[in-house]
Length: 364
Image 1 (cartoon, helix red, strand yellow):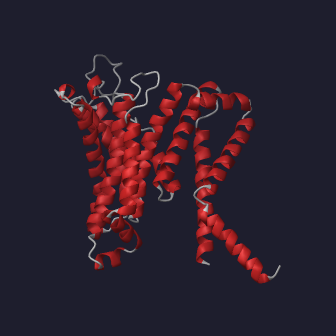
Image 2 (spheres, helix red, strand yellow):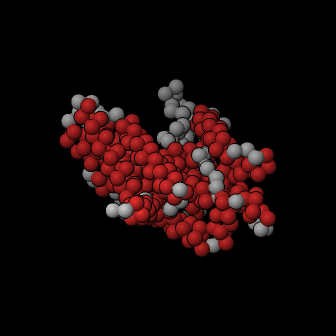
Image 3 (cartoon, rainbow, N blue to C red):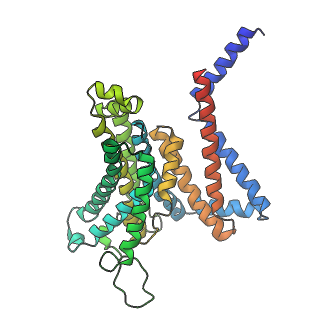
């Protein structure tokens, strides 16, 4: 085989690899990460069969387990979709955790307002959801304004805003003047009152044996809408233009500052909606740390999707079921749930490494 043919075959192989990165690399990365995880389980001295059975029971073993996994995937998917929107504008929103906290806190406050549970036509749960989404959007927009006005890096501002939001959440459930339930004794937990039943997000099945909420179709509809906006709308075009070259976009008449702020507002709103759904669809009372790292997992989902809304849905489902399976493994087989985090980290590193390699080959 001549040097020319070798060069052509290498080029073709590189092209095929790039064309299939969205399918092949994630699948291979997941399989490899799970293989490493199984080796780690064996090294811990835990029977592999027991650990896998516990994982299966937690993720897929019952209608309740599947429903809980889907509800977790909804939260991760919303945060991931918000990340994709901001990434299209060349931004990195790492503040999902804080936006979830703000959304859940605001939704709780609205759910507990006098008269909220008596509103007709589903407004009793819709208005708190919208309030949570709007509050999350405002929290994200703060980072946008800081970037536009003073050039503050959005990675730093969204991260620091998350810490502020988490401490605000802690304050709100510790203070009786805010959201803490009235103390009846020293054993009263620092959390809010339970929200009224009318303000809870309805279940698709109507049964707590399989408690999938209406958050699932809401997330699917929003994903389709965002995919359409990014690919077919003027706003989607402006996001892409600003992300590629903000200077040229400004010269072309695109309002760069407004576009950046709107992108971070929408990303924050989706995070706030995720927090509202967690509170109104699963937990029903506000507690410190109720988001449990969902914001950072949603960030990873958005990173892995590489700008694809379909990729976000796939990643959210994967991580949602992994979370449920990991909790079950820890409870039944005494395998630390941190192992799931390790597997997630391996997946991220492998996909990022493959993407870097293929991008470098493209520029050669």
